[in-house]
Length: 189
Image 1: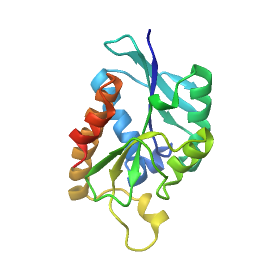
Image 2: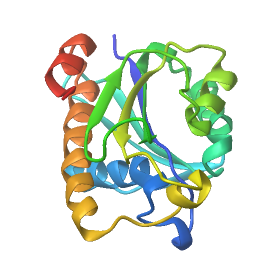
Image 3: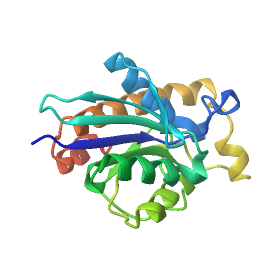
Image 4: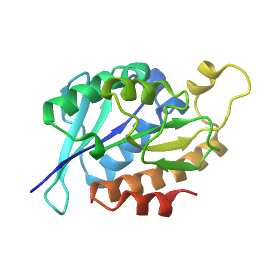
């Protein structure tokens, strides 16, 4: 019997936020869509999404909430409820200041670590058992809110591009139902 999976990248909508540190989740979704020759064709639940079927016939949802980072849980809650997606089949991709720039950290559950997007999803779904890929953007010196809304310099953008590529590969393996512990040991650097 086929199953449903949700891959959601976090970020802020609009040109002002494009390619900012806070939008690496969106950048990863763009990379996944490009590799699958897909585009976000559905606008619903305060977000955008599209679907494809994996080699097992499972339905994979690829998505971006358009609620702004701090309210990402609104979209995730509504799409999960409407399509009856099991929380064990959700993967969230987002930026992390506690991970070195250009590194990724994959976990099967845990607290928000202070990241407001995943915190809102955890609160909306009432569980910390949510698979995630954290893309390191480095720790700011000074104002955090200003830092996450700035673009990468060219040297850091190269590192971030490599990290996004790894996150894309890990996401595609997740979409093919690869054992998540194997994904963790393969991609955690």
